[in-house]
Every structure is written in C-alpha cells, then in structure tokens.
Length: 399
Ligand SMILES: [Zn+2]
Image 1 (cartoon, helix red, strand yellow):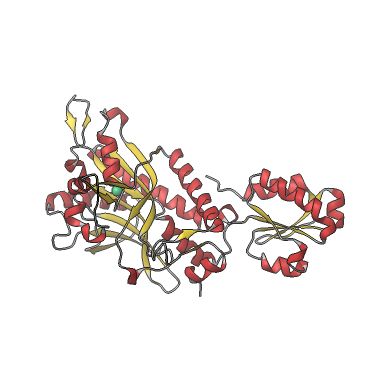
Image 2 (image 1 turned 135 degrees about the vertical axis):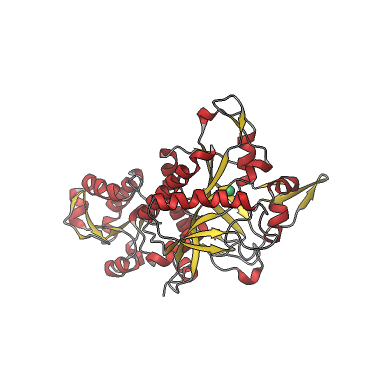
C-alpha cells in the first residue's frame, strides 16, 4: 500500500522536524524539484488561458478578515491574531480578501472583464496537532488559487471554463477524480444568512455542470461560508476522499468589499467573484500523486528525470560530460557512480528514474549513450544529441 508519508521519506521528498512543528513540512531537494515542475506547468496553463499572476503577503490586518466575513464565520480555523505596533495581524486563512482588494484598488470598465487573477500563495490553518499528518493535513498550505471577476451574466461561462481547465490539468497529471460534488450550505451561523444569494450562486453552478453534462452529488454543509462550490473529489488507496480542485461562485465578498466596475451604461455594477483552484494545494496534490504513482512519476515532474551510469571509473570522464549535456538540455539529471555498486545494483537502485543512460567503453569512445527507458524499454546506443532530443520530448508537459 502506498502511504505518501512513508514514500515521502524513502524518496527524500519532504519531512518534518519537531522544532519546526507538526503540520509544517519542509520540501527536500527532490520534493522541491517535483513541486517546481508542477508549479511551472500550472502557471503556464493559466497564462495560456487568460490569467494574470499576482503576489500578495501571507498576512493582513484583523479588520481585513472582519470585512471579508472570515472573522465571524471562520475564525475557529484561523491562527490567533498577533499584535505589532498597536495593530493586530492575522496569518491569512485564504487569499480571497487580498485579491478582492487588488481588484478594488483600480477602477475597472466592463471591457476589462473577466479579470482573472491567479497566485500560488501561502495560507494558514490553525489545525490541532492531533489531526496533522504528512502532506495531507497541514497548517501551512501553498494553494494554487485564483479569482475571476466578471459580470453576473458571464459567471456560468467562467465556471465552465474553469471546469475545462481542471479537466486539462487532471489529464496531464494523471489524476482521476472519484466524483464531482455540489457543496451547499448547511445550518447555523457558519454560513452567511441570505437565502436568495445562495440560490442565485447555486443556480450558476448547476447551469455550468448541466451545460457540460457532468454527473454530480449534492451535499449540504460542505459549502464555503460565503457561497456554494463544485468540489472535485479524489480518493486515497484506502478510499478516503479529499477535495482536490474547486470552483465557487461568490456573491457575498464583492458586496463586503464594495467591488464595482463601470458598465456600458456608464453606471457602477457589482462583479461576481469566481474562486477556483485547478489542482488544490501543492501539499495535497503531491501527497495524492505520490500514492497514485508509488514514486514512478511521469518524466515531466519526476524529481530526477535521467541518471547517468558509467560502467567503470574508466568511463567517468565521458559520463561527466554526458551529465553536463543533460543538465544543459534542461533535464534534472544525476550520476550513479561505480563506487555506489555494480551496474545491476545501480540500475535497480534507480529503477524509478524515467531515463537511465549507460556509458560503457564503446559509448565513451563513440560519443554515444545507451538509453534504458523505464516505460518504453531498452534502446540501442545512439549519438548523444539524438538521445537528448528523445528524452527532452518526453520530459516536459505538452499543452
Ligand atoms: Zn477565494
């Protein structure tokens, strides 16, 4: 059974330290390499689909979260405020208020909409230590977040476009969701009390789901405090579900932040805020991918894509040169030197690496490499430039 916590340690992806604290994992070089490849892919997918990337601080004044509604509806899940210079600051529980204020900080015409802002940003949850574990339940979260500001009559189209992007990202990553869930409000003070607002937002989400013919379950008590959402659920090997991707329609925060754009009638209108995450948090996504692939990752996000294996020390100079050419070609590559064991032992130790390059006396003499592909088998020795081109074609995500 693939447990991401065990595999994460065995593959040197991430770890925790009691002096840093539970729920605060750090990413080791292999994990950071994998995560970086996924971040680059998602950023490029967003860029190609009309998103502008922004950056904002991981904390803000308490009054920001009083305005957004988090303080009234969500403070149980937040870190307590800290006082500096007579002001109270809070580690942010979500990126939405920062993005709402970014929108509010400049005037907007209907011609600029939809405005799509995206950020891979930190957010924090004051989870109790008993429930924390590995990457799936953490206190510091790096979220692939984004907010689309659009006129109300464009919201269903924007939600549909987000669903398409989520599907594209899942397809590239190899993620297969178990179901789509329409998450609705439950009872009590956790949810903003405005039935007409909820009905309006729900109808937008239903319209987008029906337009794409998606089957979905409806569940009460799973919505955000400010609005309903479509959650795309994945399951771990034990069948436990988690939400990976989400898209939400919010008619509440635009009012709280008095967001407005100038319409064709020259009057002010209130935009809708569509909250969305294509792949969720990097923590939860990588936990899922580790369990899904058991460490044999697709080449484009494998921590090490190519390993060079000289047969003996005599081939070390040729192997060094090959390694440098791999790195220069943009590959994440490493060396498995003869002192690490027999060739057979080194091949086994690197069995999860997508591309193994064996350098024997003939390859060293001829400027060639013999490629063993994890997924496509062994090849004859070929000139290094050909082997590099073959690997490079498989080592980046296509769009
Ligand atoms: Zn949001």
